[in-house]
Length: 401
Image 1 (tube, one colour):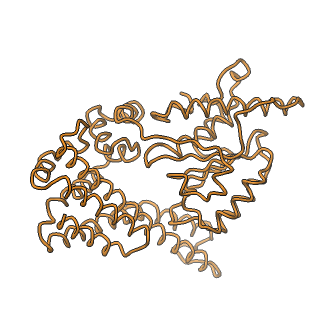
Image 2: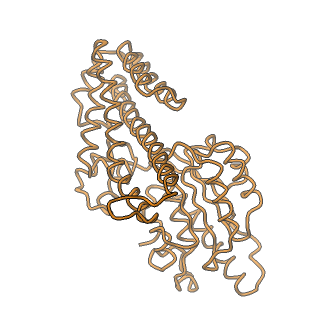
Image 3: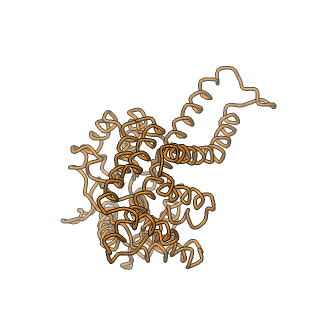
């Protein structure tokens, strides 16, 4: 399997990255042989991957990083870098390659300190003699100060360092940074392509894979979770009942509280899975005595971990709410399609009765206002409005229509 196999529905991007990986290999080969580099090259030191959620921005960046580190002997015989089997490809994809740093954040932002650490890492020569690759999956979460720190590293890169930045859109990255990057735009993969990869790679039943891909409209990670996690399906069912429960003020407030509670349950689930393990590992590293007693002078490290876990819980809750609002937008989009007799696939076919009921009981104009209410809620959350207040305002607007 090649490193590109998980890059679903992105043929054009795959071709561009494969061409760049070939030229990058030629640059390394000529340097090792003491020869002059090729006159023209599709390789550059900084890349920016943008695209809607679920399009595979981070997947593309990680695949490219693996192709840059490919050491397959077939390359010398004209083979493509990115075989997927050699030590360079394998360790890059699983996250253990010494020269590939993948940065993703569980928090709401990436600060100056973390970025300075990355920049220092980027100045190192590659241990394996090929490329030092920094994959920043959440470039849109850089604070302004952190972005300015990164800018200098992108402006004056080390000779064998490659920056791979990922963000939803160009507007999410500082203009000074994006102007120094080669830009690749990914698109939302087709429902059929997502269903195919769920069956082929994850062994999911074809019918379940097709239903999950259709419901999430091509978002690969959400589709996989929906197809494999009963709790995810239960939370989605709760969200899709909201349009039927906003007939009065009491129903609006109750529906809002249930959405907040569902997001809180998501955050709690993450805490149960990760926080306990992190805490135990840190205690062991700090030399905790039997019974859990900590050595003197370690309270600061434990407090720092607790603060980080608290911030991660906040982001998890926000991300869960954002997913719920996306599902709600999809519901009303289906309603609008029915009202306009549009020839388009209905994403939420499993709740067709609810869609028909809302469609027949309102007008396209009211449906558009409801979609605008959901989008306004997302914007309010981005501006740090209290989540319950923002969601209550939304459900009341859905009632007014």
